[in-house]
Amino acid sequence: MITTTTPSVEGRRITAYHGIVVGEAILGANIFRDLFAGITDIIGGRSGAYEEELGRARTVALQEMEERARQAGGNAVVGVDLDYEVINNMLMVSASGTAVTLE
Image (cartoon, one colour):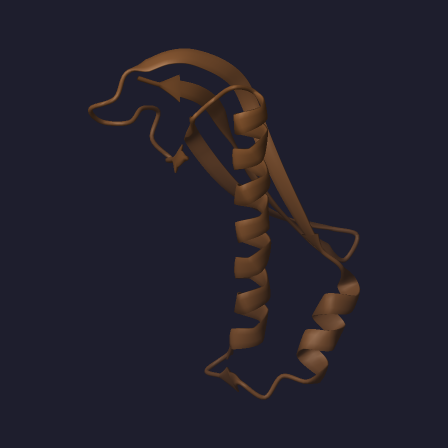
């Protein structure tokens, strides 16, 4: 499945729009506490373990969004946006875009 932040895919024509699709992943407060309790790889203010968890959450959010696009009948998602929010000591990563059918 093609996913892109642009509103179209160069060289491909959009033949149908299937609506907005989203995917979310939430990291709970315990993950933050566990990560920071055992971190030994903080160098220069960066945490490899924390970045790895964020990357995993981003991947889950994108995969969920793509699956919802498939269920809606699309074969691509355009206009993809990633957002990061803190809600009650939890980090939410959300991915959203428009499910489309490309020629």
